[in-house]
Length: 256
Image (tube, rainbow, N blue to C red; front, side, top):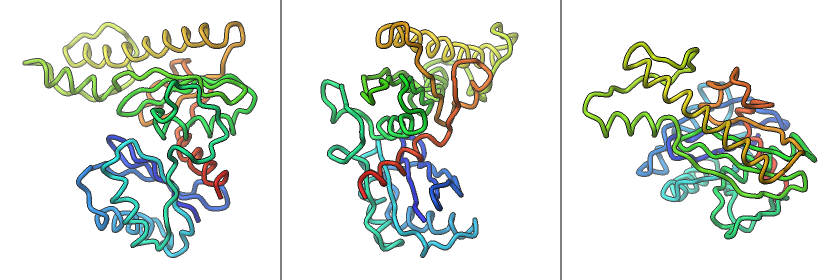
């Protein structure tokens, strides 16, 4: 079995692969001060509680946008699984042609998403929208060129900014809204978060399509923790919540 870990700013998103298929998904709060023992014990516990044997983990693949956590995760995997983890980082094989001015700046999670996207939807121009702590919108050509992207504040960051930077606005539950006009302060904030984000994604995706692909309409993929909120918003051609995990798995295969 193969364990895949996406270490994000808010959470560690994990998946267990067996025979190329995901058998288990889990999430843990991502804390920069977490020790290797805390992480290792959690990983073994979550496997045990779901009736999987940690001794059957033969490989671990990971990507991280939180440098402070990498050392702890690496040591946790070595100590508790007795394997050296493979990290998706600059210099490894991806199958992509990175067109960023500085390829080293592209987040590993965005690369993992792109690897999975070109594998799942080959020979298509792609736009990948990942709704996490930040919302990233990336363009990948049918020639497997990573063309670049856009980074905007995620929905949770936007909500926290309203809460901390204003005197009276409360924290609200982030939900999909049916009508734009709110009838209360809470409804108004929820509407602004949902429709504001929806409008940004729609306009940015449309503009990227015009700039990069002309009349060749791209295939739009939605992923990330908040992507399911927009499942019925007609923004995505395909919703792929496990895209980053699949990308990590494919990266491991390319570098085995």
